[in-house]
Image (cartoon, rainbow, N blue to C red):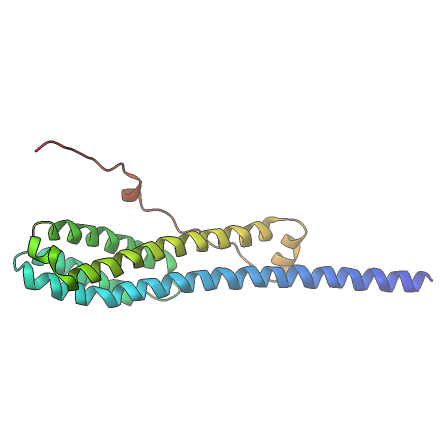
Length: 186
C-alpha cells in the first residue's frame, strides 16, 4: 500500500511538473507570436512608405530633407537583426516621429491633402500605426504573464531548470511622454 501511495505521489508530481513546463512554453510562444505581430505591422508600414513618399514628392519638391529621413529610417529598420527587438523598436519610434513631421508638412499642400491616393495612403498608414500600438500592448501583456510565471513559485524552479529567462517590455520613447504644446495664437 505504501508503494502504491509513493507511486501515486510521484505520478502527481511529474504531472504538475509537466503542466508547469508546458505553461512556461505556452507563454513564451505567445510572447514570440506577439512580437511577430509587431514585426508584421512594421513591415506593412515599410511597404506603404515608398508609395507615400512618391505621392508627397509630386506635390512638395522642396521638402526633401523630411522625405530623405523617412527613407533612411525605413532602410535602417529593415537592416536591424530580427532578434534585436529593442533596436527595432527604437528605429520604429524614430520613424513614427518622422512620419508625424511628414504629416505636418502635408498641411502646407492643400492639393496633396485633397489627393485621393494620399488620403488612402494616410488612412492605411494611420490604421497600421494603430495596429502597431495594439500589438505593442499585446506583447507587453504577454511578456508580463510570462515573467510572472518565471518569478512565481513553484514554476520558477522549473523555469530555472530549463533556462527560461524573463523578456523585456517594449518601452514608450521619452519623446512620446512629452505633453504636446497646443496654441491657438496666430
